Structure formats: structure tokens, C-alpha cells
Amino acid sequence: MSDAIDLHRRLLTLDSHIDIPWPDGPAFAAETSRRVDLPKMRRGHLACGFFAAYVPQVRRTPDADAASFARAEAMLQAIAAMGDAAGARLCRTADDIEAAWRDGVTGVVPAVENGQACGGNPLRVRRFADLGARYMTLTHTGHNALADSSNPRADLGDAATEHGGLSDTGRAAIAEMNRVGMVIDISHVSKAAMLQAAAISRTPVVATHSCIKALCDNLRNLDDEQLDALRDAGGVAQITAVPYFLKASGKADNTGPADFADHVDYAVRRVGLAHVGISSDFDGGGGFTGWHDAAESPSITTELARRGYGEAELAALWSGNFLRVLRAAEAAAS
Image (cartoon, rainbow, N blue to C red):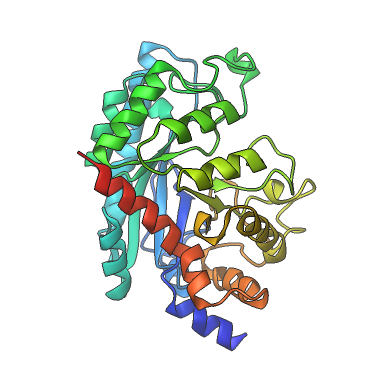
């Protein structure tokens, strides 16, 4: 155990998807009841977190679209302010993340969850990039103006599909994200939208918080064809700690690091180590016995090391693969 903990401390550990409370905003610097705050990240040697400005899906009206955009802006500003805490730093590039790790400070990276945040205007992703956002999840639960969701919302009047995958607006948003250096996150989107996004993006797409459909038949999970498309696009599937994505009967008290590692193993066998990563979705549904919060992050390294993953492989899973995708997006930006 002590050897695994020492190994964990040597790694640049990156969690690609964490939620923040809203509208109260994050109390990041102090110990809280949340699964992620700066003290827990420090105790768990979690070097960097991507914090999502989550915008819920609503019926699309001009007023609702304007409110969604305003909420995303305010949340991104609050996330950026987390980087002002002593021992933390806002990071805008892959190099920034690595520099923060070398300097012994915790990296904070903003992101956007749900393209509803654009309010139907794909050019607004430039504003998100200016505020530091490094990726945007195209949809959440329910279709939006950009794409179909993997989980239509009957209460919002959703049909099974609305756009047949991506809309023209969604395609324009992807092109704009490519231009500004933001990564396209295909978590939550329909299979058709995911495959189309992987095909048209000039840079690799990622699933920042998803699991494997072959092991747990959940609408949110990735099937083998989707995994293959991620690999072929140079992307990454970031396995996440949501219990009911990990197994059909999954709850926090009957799910553990071994269940999580099963999904990592499957993805590695299917598409190769270079296309697999780690995320928690903490404070957004993630967490289980053994990885209840950021302070328990070493348990994931311990389980994967027990299965034979060496230091270089763990470094790739914890951050190397995701940083490669970030750098590809940065390089392609105009």
C-alpha cells in the first residue's frame, strides 16, 4: 500500500470533470461537505481538476437562452476565481497544468457542460474560451440547439431524436471550438451526434466522464463502435466514478475501485492505453466506497497498480492522454 501511495504522489493526477455548487458558488479554499475542495485535493494528491460550468437543459426560448449564457459566464468567472486561493492556480494550457504540478500548486481549469450555454449562438464559445474554458460538453440530459442527447427529456417535449445527431448550429459550434482551441466533449450526446462530432472535428474529441456500455448497459455509456471512433479520432474515454454507469445495480455503497478499474481495463483492451483516462464527476453524481471524495484519489492508483499498470501507464491514464488532446486543440487553434 505504501509503495502505491508513493507512486501516486509522483504522478500528475488530473480529474477531467468536477461540478461546482450554484448559485451559491464554490467555497474552494476551505474544508467543506462537498466531495471536492482544495484541502481534499491536497490530501489526495490530486494535482489538477477541470471544473464544469453546468447549465441545465430547459425549454428553448429567447429569455431562457439568454439566461443560460449569463449563467455560464458567471460560473466560469467563479471557477477562475478558485485559482486565486493560496496553493491553487488557474491554468489555461497543458503547459500551465504541468508547470503548476512542478511548482506544487493545484491546477484549476474551467470547462462548460451543456451546449445550451451558447443560447443557440455558436460564436459564444469564443467568450467561454476567453474565460478559460478548455472544453464544452455538447449536450446534457435533453436535446438542445446543437445536438441530440443520449437521454431525451419527455418533460421538455423531446422526441427520440430532433436533429439526427448534430444540427447545423452544432456543426458550426464545433468549427468555432476548433478555431478557439476548445476540446469537444461528447459525454451525454446521442450516438449519432457523437460519431458525427468525431468525424468532423479537426481535433480529437473526448468523453470527459463516461463509462463502458458492454459492462453496464446505460444510455450514457459508450459502446464498442463509439470507443473505436474515439480511438480513430485520437480521442480519449475518461472513465468516471458514477456508480450506476459502472454497474446496473450501482450505488455508492456497493461500488468500489475494482468496478471502476474493470471499465478502465475493458477500454484499454479495446482501444489501447493511449485512449483511456480517469475522471470522477464528483459533486455531480460520482463517488463510491473507496473513492468517496478527492482525498481518496490514491485508491484508484492502488487498484490499477495491483492490476499491473506501471508508473508510465498510470501517468498516461491520470493525465498524459488528456494533456495530449488539449495540446492538439491548442495547436489547431487559429
